[in-house]
Length: 301
Ligand SMILES: Nc1ncnc2c1ncn2[C@@H]1O[C@H](COP(=O)(O)OP(=O)(O)OP(=O)(O)O)[C@@H](O)[C@H]1O
Ligand SMILES: [Mg+2]
Image (cartoon, rainbow, N blue to C red; front, side, top):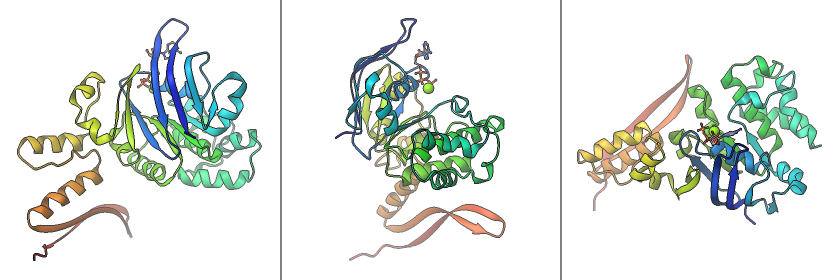
């Protein structure tokens, strides 16, 4: 069974605007895939459609082995969690904890308190439990909405711009959390750098599927990037410049971790051995990130 299977998916809004055309896409269980593309490409439309908010459509959509039809809507919805691009579309209960509990309660799931506690912790918003979600900042609302999804523990996560509006620490935490969970996920995003460490592959959407491949294949597909209005993350741009200056770049890094690995590889092949990693430290004064390097002569026969 696949987690998600889309065939010939075509959808037009009431005004005749064709937002999706013949979209075919398949996700294995446990797979993490990014959907990238310019504004208006149809990313949100695609996620809404999979979540059963846009009917009718042409083609077929199957979620966890169940075809998406009006009759199957409830079961399909139970299997997935949709994070809306705009968190204001999501929060409507008087307190954050009630809001996060709403989904599990609505579906009669067990261990509501445990689910809520775990979800609040995963989004690092325990301290907001009794606040009114409508009165929080954009980024905080987004984190509340994310906790609401996680509380359902759905088989398929549909995340629409999960990092937008998050402060750098919250973004890093979210990326860590997404990387650490083994759920299937489809992430619509402009934040290539953030998802580079999370996803197995990327789908470029511009009404149609323009390309599917790994993130590293995507960042070297210049024409696809240009056509889809995408820009390389700064770290990829830097390595692209280094490459044009003669620096031996084997594979264009998309994230900082990949960049560190690329540096390590090059310095290693230059006859020296460099071991570098970036990690968090607890200091009396708070958290701090450092790059540690350890240099030594490589053993030779
Ligand atoms: N409710 C609607 N009624 C009519 N057309 C819509 C509606 N919502 C979106 N569209 C149109 O559908 C197309 C796809 O929009 P969509 O919001 O899915 O794009 P997106 O890829 O999510 O963009 P963004 O990166 O800005 O979030 C656009 O042309 C948009 O104008
Ligand atoms: Mg969108």
